[in-house]
Image (tube, rainbow, N blue to C red; front, side, top):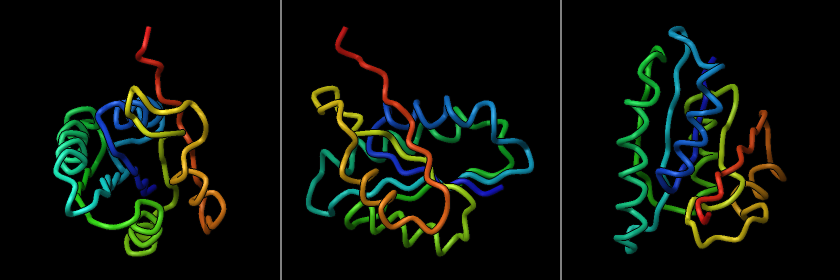
Length: 129
């Protein structure tokens, strides 16, 4: 199985890893993409931090690939899904930013609306309290 994880923060990455803990095996591949605008250093830093977490949390998975890309997240993830011929896309329900709304985020909504493969939307833990 080949999973694609879209992330924007360590919180989103942790939620995706929690989901994959019981699913991904030593025979699987997980590709993790953080999409952030080239002109947004804080977003790129957050994305890179999330990518750094992936190999550690997914140490039992056969292969873990990571990449920081520029571009709109939903479009970037759709392109990566096609490029890597993934079986499933895993994204957070909303931004991993603790200040984010708890509603379904725009990236998840866009991926679900145009999905050509299964999309799993994982809840992001409430860190406010």
